Length: 370
Image 1 (cartoon, rainbow, N blue to C red):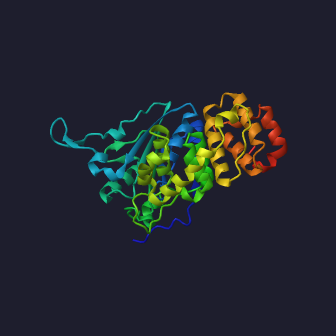
Image 2: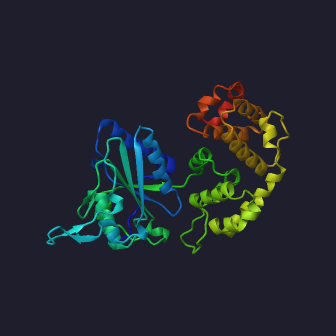
Image 3: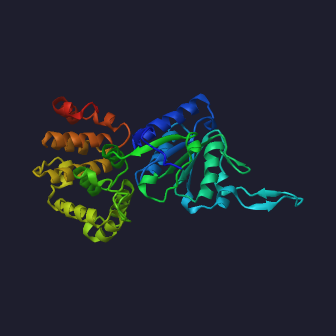
């Protein structure tokens, strides 16, 4: 059986996937169309590229339609066929076998609820498990069990070319799914990262060295490598455990690999020479760094501080006045990042006189973002 070719399917960034699929599902909700009439979706991509994150963001978008969303995340690599079909038992008169319903089929079928069944690692599962999972994606049933009409089915898996324990999908089956390949985009990842509070040092480093966002190489046998997923875990360590990169270095290296971790630790040394972020937001106008790497670190730190104080418009106004003195391209990067702080935050910025003045002189640098 030849390997499926992904050259003729769309390659979309995570945010584009979220926009397209959530738009489709929202339209179905508004028009009263059952999800069972829509095709199941297959997301392809290397490990850690953001497939699971896309599903979580789709759920969040659907919640904006006034629905309660339940996501059932099934890691098929850890399942066996019984986990999907259920355990056989005898009926009341001991004449027939009855299959006990697995927990993943215990879904709320209410009108104000949307269920998302996410079948992750479908291409990595044993083929006996794949057979049951494919029946779910195609027929919305497995054995005697049926998914409710308010259930969305999304599957995800690695490509055979990723060398990540992936079995080939039969073409007859593939023709019944909607296929999308997940593309890595730093710009798309950064928008998500700012809104979700990714650690400022991770954000600053990757803004400076965006090629380090994804270092997966299927030709190498490394077990620790940089991906959007592993950087998110680095951020969780720095935000939740200890922000000292030197102390956390061994753990960081265990997530992104020693080579990338050394680059990250070396770059983070510039933070000790940055001007006081508190002084900037207090309106004190400290000196602006000259070095490019320091400017990337400064914009990341200012964005993180602005996110935490986004409702204090005087502090935000002070920081915009400071940004007006920065090199124009970095000033534009900072204002663009401010707009990503939360949905529609640019409408808040529009009410700040300092931002209006900034737009009048440097707005052309925003490339149509405003």
